[in-house]
Image 1 (cartoon, one colour):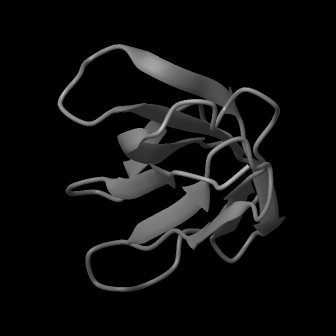
Image 2 (cartoon, one colour; image 1 turned 180 degrees about the horizontal axis):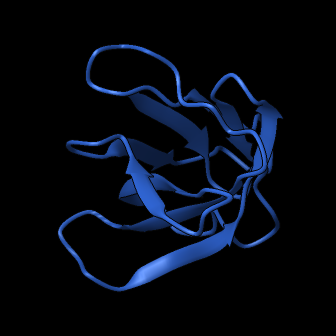
Length: 106
């Protein structure tokens, strides 16, 4: 998945349907979700924040806040699910969500 957003934008939210490798959706009942993002090729996280569960049928989103898209660059992102039994799983299960912050005219 690739998501593009212009510098200094806070909309649209990054929305994803979390799925297992067999394409079945993740059950998010009584779970919590966080969003993590880092610059491509780096290890330091630039965003570690709560995400919103849109549907317990695997739909989540991260709503950008001021400063999140201040730097034009390529990023890798993932959603981290903590289930009711405190186990943790990260999505996508392989690779990352590609986030591109692109130049704006003004």
